[in-house]
View 1 (cartoon, helix red, strand yellow):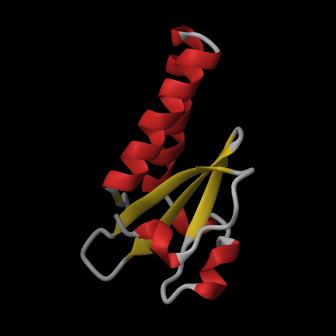
View 2 (cartoon, rainbow, N blue to C red; view 1 turned 45 degrees about the vertical axis):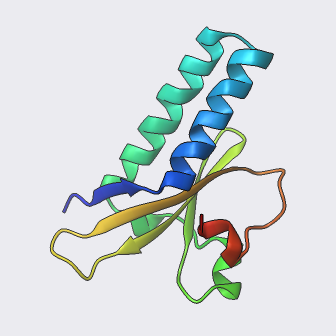
Length: 108
C-alpha cells in the first residue's frame, strides 16, 4: 500500500532554510544534491513508513512521531492510517544537532 505524503508548511520552511544554508556555505550544486536526497528520503516513506523508529520526542507528545535520517537531518513525521491508503504527515526536517523537538515546534 502506498501512503500519501503531506508536508507541513514548517517542514517545507525547514527544507528551504537548509537549501539556503547549503547554497551559501557550500554551493548551488551541493544544495541541489542535498535537496534531491531529502526528497528521495521523504518519498521512500510511501512504502512501509512504520519501518522507521519512533522519535525520542514521541514519549513527550500526545501523538506518535517517527523519524528517518538523511545525512545530518531528521525527517520527523506522523503516520495516519485511519483513512484509506494512509497518509504520512511530514512535520519537520530538523538538523540532528539541534535540541529535541517540543509540541510547540509542530505548530506555526
